Amino acid sequence: MRGWMRLLPVGLALAMFGCDDGGDDAEADAGAAAANLYYDGAESAQLGADGNEARCATCHSNDGTAMSGATLMDIAYRTSFKGGDAATLLDATNACVTGWMGGEALTADDAAWAELEGYMQSISDAAVTDPNPLAPEVLENEAAYAAKYAGGDAAAGEAPYTEMCGLCHDTMLTVNNFPSYNLTTLVAFSEGRIAQKVRTAGPPPSGTADAMDSTPGPMPFFEPSDLSDDDLRNIIAYIKSQGS
Ligand code: HEC
Ligand code: HEC
Image (cartoon, rainbow, N blue to C red; front, side, top):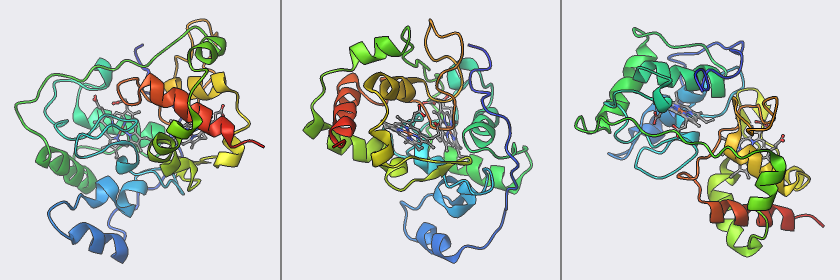
């Protein structure tokens, strides 16, 4: 599992620090719940590849809510990250910046890093130091995912689809340099393929019996603690119900 988060090749990215973006400044300046431009503003997306639209906030909440990535609430003082693959908060952030987002690694003295680190510390309790577990669901192969995730309830899948998938797929959000497919395109993937993609997207592993990584790409994976088996089963039924 070593190196599991050192995913895709670093993209041809230019982080455009300090780039002026009035709309986001106004948004982030408003009120105590305001986050940080490098967490959820245009500056965050610009840490990634040219054209990347994913922000830290696309995959990480700041309030404990489950998304594909762990919540950043209480993240800053843990003793290691990414299941032990990243020793420091900067290393963990850089695995996301270079891997999922396709940008260039931040250095300890970057202004953007000072902002991001300060923000993560501001939403973290220094007493929370235990590392988060990292436990992607790796089954044997696509057929095993198909067997496990058959028989969902399409109507019950619409809400979790919108919440967990639609934020990228309904807007065709570009993650790194890949636009997310819209729902009409997703329908064409088989049940087993959708389930395997959701559980193992990104770097290896894909399935214990798969010789190669069969689900590469910048879409983040969801651990069962981020998205329950029932929700995933229902989401798949919902997607498949959109076909004619
Ligand atoms: C496209 C989705 C995506 C984006 C964008 C993203 N991350 Fe991540 N991040 C993940 C996933 C998936 C993981 C690993 C699984 C997990 O931690 O739940 C992860 C892990 C992490 C971890 C380690 C968490 C832990 O529990 O050990 C940190 C810290 C982190 N990301 C910070 C950031 C920051 C800061 C940004 C913005 C600069 C960012 N990430 C952008 C998906 C993303
Ligand atoms: C952070 C944005 C993001 C989220 C959240 C997300 N996806 Fe994706 N998804 C992508 C992108 C980008 C691609 C195309 C690049 C790739 O294959 O990784 C993709 C590709 C896919 C594919 C194509 C698989 C293949 O074999 O090419 C499927 C199926 C899919 N997503 C389903 C889902 C489902 C179901 C969810 C919710 C549980 C979800 N996605 C959540 C961004 C996202």
